[in-house]
Image 1 (cartoon, rainbow, N blue to C red):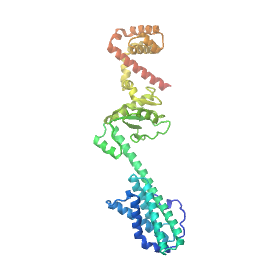
Image 2 (spheres, one colour; image 1 turned 90 degrees about the vertical axis):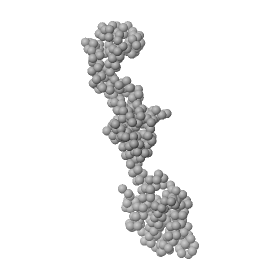
Image 3 (tube, one colour; image 1 turned 45 degrees about the horizontal axis):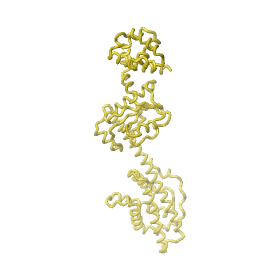
Image 4 (cartoon, rainbow, N blue to C red; image 1 turned 90 degrees about the horizontal axis):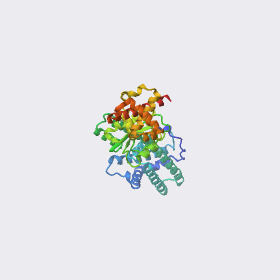
Amino acid sequence: MPRSAEAVPARTAWPRVPPEVARVLWPDVDSLTDLVIQAIHQGVPEYARPDDESYARMVRRAVETALHDFIGRIAASGASGKRAGRDQTAKLFRRIGRIEAAEGRSLESLQTALRLAARVAWKQLHERARQGALDIEVIAGVGEAIFLYLDELAEECAAGYTQARAEFAGEMERRRHRLLDLILADPPASPAAIAELARAADWLLPRKVAAVALTRDGAVPLPSMQPDVLVDITRADPCLLMPDPDGPGRAALFERCLRGWPAAIGPAMPLDRASSSLRWAKRALSLAQRGIGGGRNGLVRCDEHMSTLLILSDEELAREFGGQVLAPLRQLRPDQQDRLAWTLLAWLQSAGNAGTAASRLHVHPQTVRYRLRQITELFGDALDDPGTRLDLQIALRARELLNSADRYAKA
């Protein structure tokens, strides 16, 4: 809510200025308005817009309102209580602060304009004193009142500016969240709709993106990301979208930013396939949380676990497939099944070299050869078939992954 006059902090009391001073200043208000506007146009060129009548009217209205309110307060003996004119002046200058925020400027230009107005008014006071219209003894008090009054206007401008910036930031965040939703929809929204909202959200459409699946249990607050990263941790599936993930330094940057957050980075995909990148990232994160395919510092990279994602894309099917292909092992005790399964997988991964398989298993080559004789008795000539070998390797790898998940769940 805009700050009301009652909410304004207590200010320094106005100096005592004789009300008669107002009668001296009223006749000069129109000429003083012109002088202040001229000084502002010269000192702050961005406020001089001769072709923009509405803006020129706004500047004039602000100067006129401030001068009338100031002189009116002097006429009321410097009263600092509520007055309709004062409330309207505060409202006007809060609006001016909002305009500054909307146009993307800092408050520096506005503060310069206020200082210029004070300088012009001070100079005019001295001129009236020189002419004998004002007693030199009251000049100091009026000057102090001018600067106190400009401080009040500056406070109102700052209040409007701050409120507007917060609103704009909130609106921009809402647009970026909506844009993320459109991009990650399956199927995604039309390219035209995405492009339109991207412009409104000040987001350049990238050639490729990578989705990052997040959990809600990060050990530390998620740090601020670069402006081109779309983030929404309020979604049912918290995530962010990383543009141009293959760019220089991008991978290292995200590893630093996501440190302490369990997360998975999906593969780089064209923008219209961002939902696929997120789907695989979510799957990789889910597997990692079950002890399958963990990454460095809690960060899983799908590109490093594509075979795991493929094999376990349908766990029910993987279990059924493994049950059929590895059926000969079922006649053994569980510990025997495990030893022969590990040996067979190592042997297949070593292109049938028993010595290499032994190194993988950290056992003696003779142990591997003994187990291979048992395996041959179970599977027979099927071991010589390339297709069967491929099926066995896939089934054994799926068995290894699923057993790892089972052990993790029991731990």
